[in-house]
Length: 258
Length: 285
Image 1: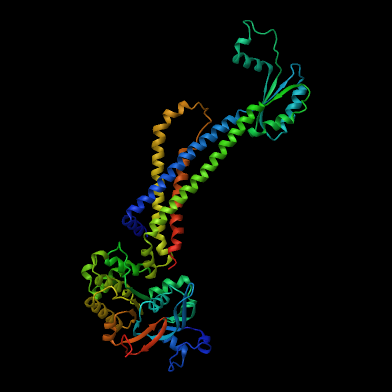
Image 2 (image 1 turned 60 degrees about the horizontal axis):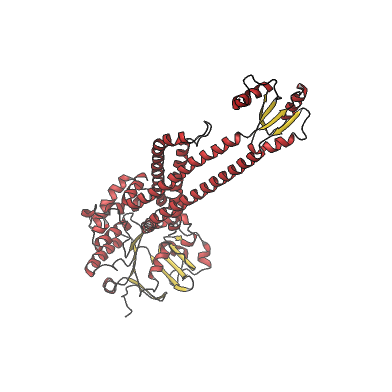
């Protein structure tokens, strides 16, 4: 991963609000995600996110919480460069997204595993093929695909479903396939948008345990969620959004402020 | 990539069939029309080629006067060729066409002079060639070019040519729109799939490749079927139709294989370019 070689970053714009971050350039390089005063306005004039500034270090597990429409999904889509911020700076893994050329976006996304509420599996491909697709898009050879797919399916506990199609799987199983697809490259960052939103509480616990294990292996996990119980149980960093503003950022927070 | 395209054809068999059928219909009509159109054009060319200018000399014309006209025609670049019909040949021709004019013992003398039959490069030049011989050179009795007939034939041919041209353009546009629309529907049905591909980091070409190949296969398949249908139609129908059309041997439609080649190329391009262009909208994720 490349370091941001931009001196103006250090001298002109205060990237990070945290007082202990003295050497900003080094901080940006060390951090997984930097949001610096990000504003996103949807046409014509709906403010989805404003004055959003925070730093997520490598290896952190972070919950993004807040009611519907508070800007969680906007944040996820900004991370994937699916959307462009109206103003402000976003750095992911040392890459300044504003300077990332469109042709390099696939490269960025291969380094970010994505998990969505609606799974987003390819309906006419089996479990194995869905996971393999993420490897195929980056030109991985057939040999390494044959090796890596069973390995990651073992991790999510779906080895026996390798030839099932998504509509033959339960919601929890589909979500585990999508986590397997997101993680098969061992990306440094995993972004989840309401991964348990469509699942019952028991299944959700399984998914959370899986994400926890992935996080323990060193992958940064950012998870937007509504799941109050889960957030309160895990006691991880919580960034709470309200009406597009960051209302709270706690090291070991709960879903609601105490 | 081929494997991807083939699997996707299998998985979306109904849209594939729809797209192939659309190509088939469009290409079949186009092929039929090219065949008919080129036949009619060739027929009108044939009729036009029968338009000639005739220069009739006096009976007592001097060889030098004929020679002067020959020199003048030689230097006229609208003239393709000209031919001297001697008085004897002219008389023989008339005797064949209208034997009742001649008594049992023939005519006492030949009333005709020699004549030139001039074939112009283009049928439209007959009038200017005739006018270039005005005032009549000495020794020339009359210059004719069938003014009325020529004008009629030329204007009919012109109408036929423009109808053919317009119809081909309309047909091309209609089949392009029809095929593009079918492709768009099939891609629209799969736009979520494309979105997912983009989100896991597929480049535009990685997504586009199989789709374009699929379009290409549909286009090729459709036009191939159209060619087969046209071939069957040609073999079955032409032998019974051709003898009824009283046309000369130089009236021909464009060769079947040339038409087949046009249809295949067009179907192929339309399929690939159609899906490639349509995809652009859905790739912006």
